[in-house]
Length: 328
Image (cartoon, rainbow, N blue to C red; front, side, top):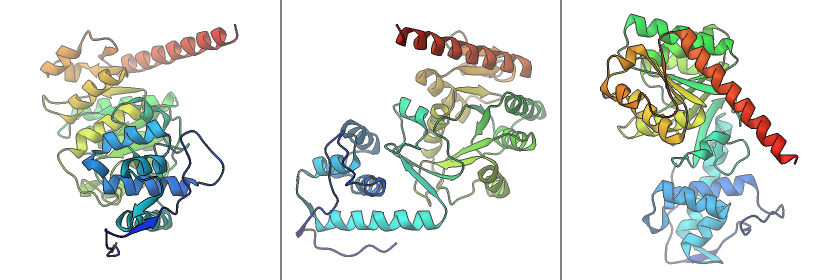
């Protein structure tokens, strides 16, 4: 989208209604906040990185307030900054017209569990049904999976659907593809979290599967819509997959697999990790994780289901205890 040429030496008043953190008087809208966040991430005042900017927004409780604070001026923006706000607002309209869901970390519809991780994405794009509290488990593993690995991924995904759990995976070849297809085939809810912009289908062979996942569940991206696949985007995607779900199941993986990254991030996030014998017997990193708090070993699909059920029972007990304490 072409941007207007402006003289950055000129200054114009900030037209958005700005509110202090925690203050709500109906003057600002969700759209205002979304436009301010998009502009903030593009402008990157003080050369701040996205994680720093996201924390700044969360601390202020407002992207508008964060933008105002970081520009160092309570009343005025440069015309260049004002142009960025206008361009962001136009992009929001275009994304909406395209049928894309755009949600920021400040929005009510933003997936709640993602806010619990320090790699919290400042925004997400989505197609399908976006849920605030989605009971979901990641099923991940190698792109170059064996026949045994594919069968295991299929069986685990089908079992999770039987438990009423959404199946998260990354729409890559191998284990991811098997998990998504099995979830769809069993009538469940697939959640595809991808390492590119939402307009891209990567790998190209999974173009049709992308559409099926969006139609039957949710397709989600934390990158600008046309962002290409890059080396750093897939570890970022793995962090989001871990954060979105309640647990991660690693079916089969190599020593340098992205599943290894997700397993370690899940441990860091305090999310349970279930490693199958296939990955435990084949990799040193899985052996290193064995015995860590929250890491479970499964030799069969039933073992995976038993672990998930025990985790759900524990969560229920904790919730009941907290409720009882709150009534004292």
